[in-house]
Each structure stands twice: as structure tokens, then as C-alpha cells.
Length: 290
Image 1 (tube, rainbow, N blue to C red):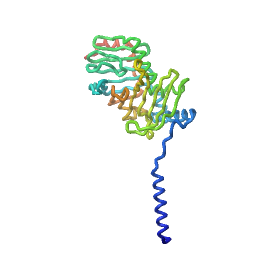
Image 2: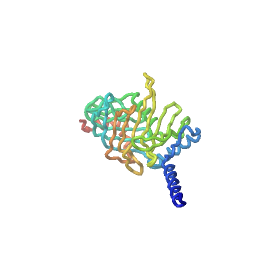
Image 3: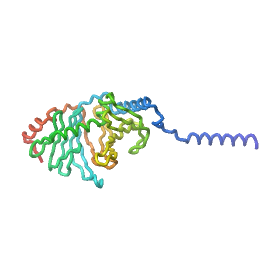
Image 4: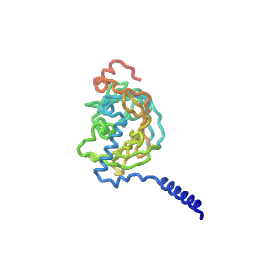
């Protein structure tokens, strides 16, 4: 073989080898290869990135959020949509919530508490109770409703990021990479001292949360139940990122959806909106109840 031809053939072989090597995908880090301390450090770094992406100190110090949009519900048996209604969602952090909606096509509110009424309904969870305002007046929802609400807050993503990361007995682990809702994500796994297990999927590029899951056991079958909330369509509101679309899924079956059309942050919502006395005054004022 002539030297020139041999050189060309060798160069071509080398180029092919380089291309073949570069085409080999870089193996994702296996979380099982990490020691516990390294796994926790990576998990905390990912959670810090998510907090910064959500708005950093503005997000951590948010006082309230007032949003309007639509609330939709699905038939849990067949997964078909049961329609949606206009609704308003008001939150005062960390533990007050007020939801207004027309409940004529719905039997639960956004926290799964039965409504069983027609027309406009206001559901309030405050510091010392939970109540509903309907066309016939104010009703106490009872202690179980408040207990259920606070239990859900305990495993809420915002509560975790804002106040629980330094809690005694909290275990954090890196859960590896994945593809969730068509996005490349890193999973963070969380367990608390009450053995409540949670998982957060964080977008590798935007660092915003994509999904937050709470893992429990069915009291009858003992089978695992995965209750997940998805987050998408983020908008910058008052210096923090707010997901304008979220869905709740139980074992990947949709149960509810929220679509915000408008949100305002740190508007100074009146404390009276979250008390029984405030609801009684609203009822007595003659505000029209549909």
C-alpha cells in the first residue's frame, strides 16, 4: 500500500473511532453508588437550586398568594373529566387557605373535603378551625377537616422547602435521573421522623419542580399509594415563580386540575377572610349567595 493511501486509511479509521467513542452516551450517576453523606449533600444541593429557581428569599419569605382560575375534577373510576368551575384561591402562609367556587358540579373541594351543596361555596381553613359559607350560612366542618388539611400541609412541597429542611429526623437522598412529563429531571427522596415518604422531581435545566409525590400505604390492602402533584406553565409573580397549571394524580390517575388565569403575591390579604367571625360578617352583610 502506498504511504499516502495508508495514511488516509489510518486517518479515516481514527476519525471513525473518535466519532464512535463520542457517540457513547455518558452514563447517568447511579444513586446507589453514592455514600449516604454524599447522597444527602447532592439532594440538598438540588433542593437549594430549586428554591433559588422559585425565587430564593422572595419565595421563602412570601406572605400570601391570591389566584383566580378554574378547578376541574375527574371521575376516579374511569378517569373522565367532570368539567370545571371558576374559582378563587387565597393563601396566607404557612397555614391559612380560602377557596371560593360554584360547587354545583362538584362534591369535594381542592383538599378533598366533601362540599355536597349547590351554588357558591367558600371553604376556609384557619388557625383554629375549618368552615364553609353557603347560601344558608356558615357551617363548622369539624375537627377532622382541619386535621386532614394540616396533614396535607405537612407533606406539601412549599412547606418542605420553606420550613422543614432543617427538621430533626429528616432524611434526604439523591434518587437519580429520569424523564418525567417529557422533561429531564433529578429525583430527590425525602423521609421524615414520622416515616412519611416524599419525592420531588426537579428539572435539570430550569431547576424548577416538575412533580412532588407523597407515598403512603392503603389502610386496607397495604398497597403503596402514590399521590402526586404536577407543576407546569410557571409565571414570574412578584419576584417568585408560580405554576399556573397543576394536577393531582393518584397512582397516575388524574383526580383534580388547577388552571390559574391570574395571580398576585404579597397583597396583604385581610385576616378576617380566614376566620369564622369574618365569614359570619360576610353572610350577614347580604352578599349574594347563588
